[in-house]
Image 1 (cartoon, rainbow, N blue to C red):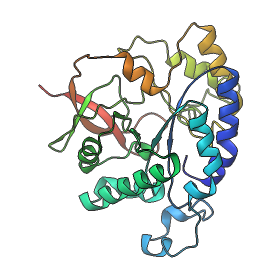
Image 2: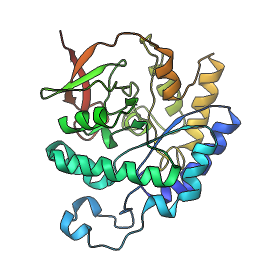
Image 3: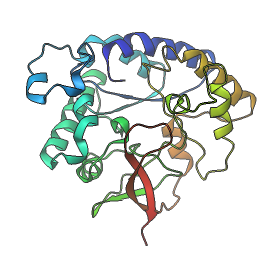
Length: 273
C-alpha cells in the first residue's frame, strides 16, 4: 500500500472480501509521504520532490490501517518512502537504509502502539544493508524477494538470521502481459501456476491499489477456486509458525527479471554451503 487513495479505497474492499471468505492475510504498509498526486513523481529529482506539499499515509489513513489490525490480519511495514525505495534502494548507503526503516518503524509504533514484527521490500528491491537492519530490528521474518521456499539470506557478503518468505507466484499484472491472458481468464492462469508442490506452499502478492480496485473481482474468483480446491489460505505469520524449529538453508540473493516484469528484482539464488 503506497498511496492514501489505495489505502482508503482498496483496503476496505479487501477487508470486506477477506471477511466474507473468512481468510486472514498479511498487509505491509508504507506510512510516509504520499507522492501519488504527482503523476511523474518517479522522475522528479529527490531534492525537488521533498519540497512538494504532501500528506502522510499514517495520518491520513489512520482508521483504515487500524481496521486491518482490528480484523486480525498481520500488519508489517514496507518502505517509508516507496517512490525513493523502488527507484534506487539497490545503490543506497547504510545510513539511508537505516533511516528509512527507522522512520517506518517509528510511524508504525505511533499508529499501532507496538513495534513492527515483519518487513516487505517495495517492488522486491533490496540492498545488503537491509539484511543487516532486519536482523538488528529483530523482525520475525521478511518478504523481500521472489523465490521458492523460506530461507536465510546472504547478499554481497552480508548474512542475516532474519528468515525470508519469498513471493513464489507471478502477480496478476505480470500475467496480464501474456498474449493469451485477459481479465476473464486471468484467475485461471494464476490458479494453474499454483499446481506445484513447494516446501512451504505458494505465496501470492497483491496491492490494495490493484486487487482492492479494478482487479477485485479477479481476486474474488481466485479465493473461491482456492477454497474450492481444499487449499488452506493462511497469513504469512501462520505459515512461518508452521515450519516450527525446521533448520533453514541459507541462499544467496541474486537479480532477475520475471516474465511480465519491467525491471530486475531480488530473487532467491544459489544455496550457500
